[in-house]
Image 1 (spheres, rainbow, N blue to C red):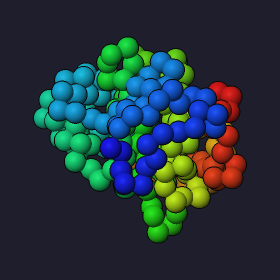
Image 2 (image 1 turned 30 degrees about the horizontal axis):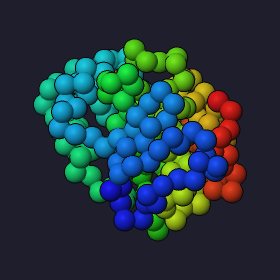
Image 3 (image 1 turned 90 degrees about the horizontal axis):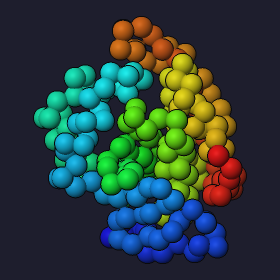
Length: 202
């Protein structure tokens, strides 16, 4: 099952995007969101071994080797689902990315993150994957806010967050070093439980 706190079914009248929720698989429109499996190593390497994909993700090594892919998949299989639920995104039978939550139970918040392989950019997949995970997060955990952050120059990711209905709440100057070793600013977006619209446009 998903985890002990997760509901086994979702009322379709509340969230039309949920088609079904069985064990650890969520089918939504074009996508399947599921737990990682050992068979995902080759496809994980395929989409993550790409400097353009990792441009704003400096923690992802480039080149991304088969050993990196094995560690990545193992980490996502072994990670505690009640704190770091990470979904593999499957599109047309292929692993193309991830969407995950990082739950802070003490603060009653969660961070959402997503990463989509470059071949699938521009198709609305990040929004399609992230929206039901936000809904699932609010319905499954005792959290009051979900937030996300990205490099201030990452226009694509900022558009995703805006389409999700999240609002820009902060800009942190000199937050990180980019791949060139230059200081970068981070923008923060958030949405509160009582603001969230599961079937919103976008």
